[in-house]
Length: 203
Image 1 (spheres, rainbow, N blue to C red):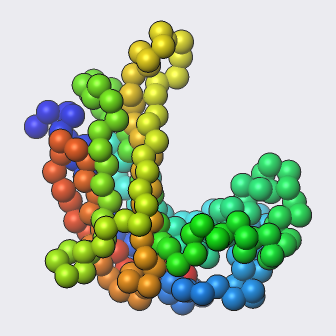
Image 2: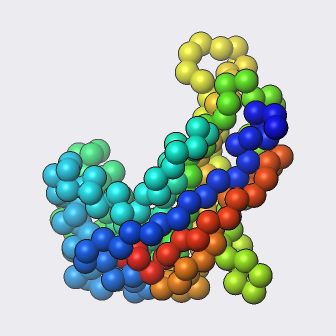
């Protein structure tokens, strides 16, 4: 199989149910948002432990990360970003967090960072599709996007080698909550791989 085909589509299972997680919450209460903000203000070790529950271990040479983002985790990520930028007040305001979360209300996301083989021949970013479920349970994304990654260094305009991409797709959380569903990631020119994800194990 050619290297450009080998990256194909890759997914993995989320199987661990960390203590305290009750499954995807479809309507975050004020107390839930405050708990998420508290998690964002935790130590580096505490935050790493929190995010580990949503990250899928990947051993494939072409996939750096694969993760699930629920509304609850999205609040933590948003707060971490704002705090890192010096906006400490955001990490203490559930009202601001609720407003920032608005674009992702009722959604669960799948995000993957993919690294192409150094000798890939892609002239442009290949199409990357992420879906959930199969057959009658098939869910097309509500929104999808892919961001190309180029090799660092000094190159002529448009000549930097394409080395990878980050893809993210949003889905209806109500259709995934408390269920075990296949997640399918498909890269144009490659093959599909299906794995079961236990969405009920993630808050």
